[in-house]
Length: 251
Ligand code: PGA
Image (cartoon, rainbow, N blue to C red; front, side, top):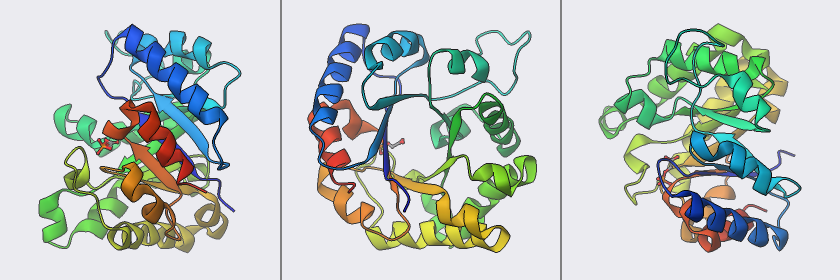
């Protein structure tokens, strides 16, 4: 049985005071959760050390939204995976579509970041997903599996076992347009079948979570699908009550 996972991606939101309030409310809510879901939150870099102190001894795990492709060196403005590991992090999101599209991250760069994260004993949350145009041209499987293959070619299929895959159709992110449970399940199954062809046990154990306008009202139906193991939640994770309600849908 794969343990469900719900991770909040806080993106570029919140002040320090808001982060403290939100963390306090998420911790309080997590204490009354009825489900055995694993929970994580990903604030911006600058607050990670502070967030780690607040989260200590809670069940809420910490993640980062990005990482450098290099381990060290003359890379002004970058943050290395090893530095994140020292801040008691658990996950690092790599290849989010906002990074791919707005910051022009290539598949190669995403694969390098994935490898850096694993080398520091952190868990990468690898985002894959198609644009609306690609979906309309029936290229979804090709795009998503192509993004995944870049990683497999770099780190090998075994390493994928120690990661989380997030299927995030780009047309559903921040748009309020969620993929239907059937649409999401289809792609999750395609991903798992693709992994199964290479390594049965990796396919059976790796968690594939869904992202794109997940809300309290649609989470349960999504999380009930056979190959959907939880969610990566943007906007709705900025409201503690809504986020906890989403976490409670994952049992
Ligand atoms: P959203 O974002 O839930 O606001 O659509 C999801 C994400 O970008 O991970």
